[in-house]
Image 1 (cartoon, helix red, strand yellow):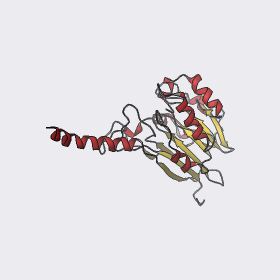
Image 2 (cartoon, helix red, strand yellow):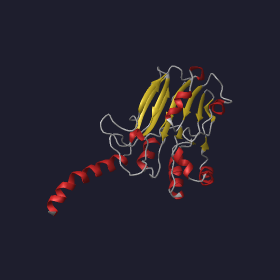
Image 3 (cartoon, one colour):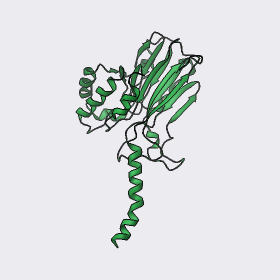
Amino acid sequence: MWKQLILAASPLVAAGLYMWKEAFRNEVKETVLADHRFPEKAPLALFFISDIHRRLIHPSIITSAAGRADAVIIGGDLCEGGVNSRRIRENIKRLSSIAPVYFVPGNNDYEVEFEQLAVIFSEWNVTVLKNNSVSLTDNVYLLGTDDLSKGKSDKSSLFHSVPSNVYKIIASHNPAFIRTIQPEDRVAILLSGHTHGGQIRFGRFGMYEKGCWKTVNGIHALVSNGYGTTGIPFRLGARAETHLITLCQPEQTI
């Protein structure tokens, strides 16, 4: 009887181990966006990570991006309720070793007292973007939204004081923010996460679309599978990922 039970359980154990492994992948996906609108003579590299949740960022991720990125963008859900502040601090410390860090809030970040996050951000000079912007260069601006699902995003504040003719990159935890963008906003890139790519997928079927790059009305739009998980630490068909994105003009050689 016990032998039969073990044999019956073996496929389930193997499936569980596989999904656990997918959830704890440490992958940096590299993308080169050769955009004729990009105004700089030299390439600009961005490291994007979203949906960290409870994970501790693996040193291999840091090694892969260190010395190659000009800025780090945390696309929301840095943490969630119950995550120890020491882990949050360590993740920010590690990311700060790559390049200056910019953070936009996600829905789960509101489960943690912001004063707690503010202390950590202050230690490592993290720039918090809540419906405001910062210039990465004279001609390239990063705009960061507050969380859409919490009703906290404010498009008019987001674009306030952003020159109309600059190259605009929006970081929004929730990819649905793209529906608010109009052609006259002249947005070049939108970086988002939130959906985890469905986290558990069965072939083409999942609660959300698998993470990918798309072009939407001229906007290069990324929805990342994210790095961590919600609930049980399993993934299937939507493995954990981070991103190194290099922006350049088409004629530039990377």
